[in-house]
Length: 206
Image (cartoon, rainbow, N blue to C red; front, side, top):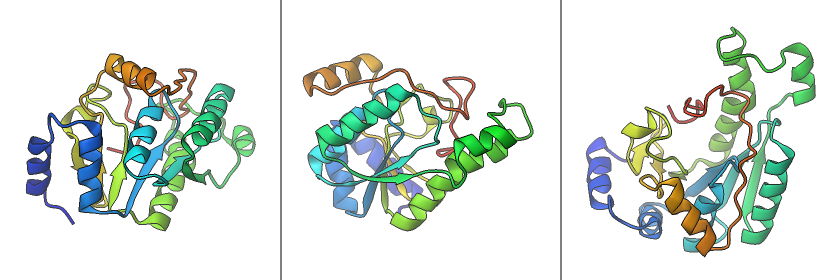
């Protein structure tokens, strides 16, 4: 749908644009859009921003099954407050079952790839196969991982979906102000079972 040259032009044109302007442009390119979330810190910003431009945009929540109680309460609050149109995707095997047969393997263990496939990649692929979006809104930001430093506001997923990160150049401090101004909650007690380090790529984007 998009060429690398078109992506480059978009990134140059919208480098200094506001998140709402970026989101509006993405919807002009295609209304077949989803926003993905795991309700980690600062996710309220992307969910609020997208739904402020187009209410009831499909929200894909891939829940690994290992979230903290704080994250689940946070998710329920945001879903209610923003009246989100959430589609929940979970692994085909329960966390309790997996705890018995595999546990949570370390990132260096041979089972780690299978674990990541089960709890994150398969549910995400199932979600994208069902929704078939042309535009995918994310809250990726520069400085999170080496890979994310290279992609820009607009990028293409492995499957050719236009990935849009409206807050790409924003710092935590700037996002703190956005959350405060829009009376949005934040929650830092978040756990990703596939990552040992905060700056490790989660597998969905690289």
